[in-house]
Every structure is written in C-alpha cells, then in structure tokens.
Length: 148
Ligand SMILES: [Fe+2]
Ligand SMILES: [Fe+2]
Image 1 (cartoon, rainbow, N blue to C red):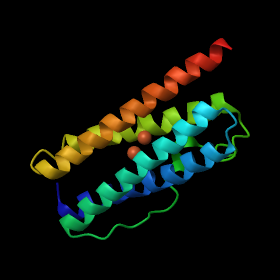
Image 2 (image 1 turned 135 degrees about the horizontal axis):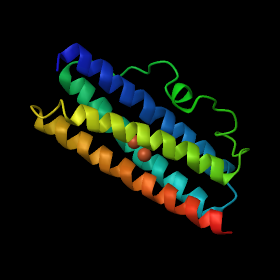
Image 3 (image 1 turned 45 degrees about the vertical axis):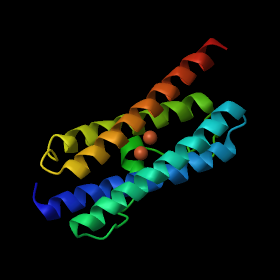
C-alpha cells in the first residue's frame, strides 16, 4: 500500500478510535445500569489504547496523527441521543454494535493489505480482536435486556 494512502487510512482509524473514547465515556456517565456503565468505561480505556497504538504506527511510518472531520456521524446516520443515553440502553447498544462492526470490517480490509509490515499487521489484529470482544459483549447485553 502506498505510504500516503496508508497514513490517510490510519488517520481514519485514529479519528474513529478517538471519537469512540469520547462516546463510550459519555455513555458510561449517562447510563444508570451500573454494569453497563462500568463496562463502557472499561471499553473506553481499551479504545484509548487503540488511539495510542494507531498514533504510534502513524508516526513510525512518517506521518502525523490527525483528527479528520466527524467520523461517527456518517456511520450512524443520526447521532442524536447516543451521547446522552436519551435513547435508552437498547438503542445505545445497537448504535455501538454498528460502530464496532464498521471498525471490524475496516480493520479486516486493512489487515489484508498490511501483510508486508509485521508490526502494523499485529497491531491491526490486536485491535480487531478487541472490537470483536466489545461487539460480543454488547450483543449479549442487548439479548439480556430484551428478556427483561
Ligand atoms: Fe477500537
Ligand atoms: Fe471497540
């Protein structure tokens, strides 16, 4: 992959991960369900690790981590309420699953092109698996809430 194109792609992930830190932190603070709140806070810490490892890769490759415009809004269509919990936990979880699935798809696409860079390849895999675990937890919690 051409270096400039790779840096653009990594900056997209950098922006997404940054927005996810803010989103999950805000959701954690707005959520009354204590288990959901604690989990969102813990996931925000992991998203911050992704921000840091992607920023590290961008610098190593010779770029500068740069926040692109709003990344989450185009994925979710409308973002009203997802920061405040106003939509309720089920809509919140559905929005978060959509985001995690988009991140997973894009990590998978980039992994297919990053095989010639073992360090980047490993970081992309690590982040992908974290997103997969987040998705699984969110989906399980959604199922639990549907039973109540
Ligand atoms: Fe992430
Ligand atoms: Fe995630």
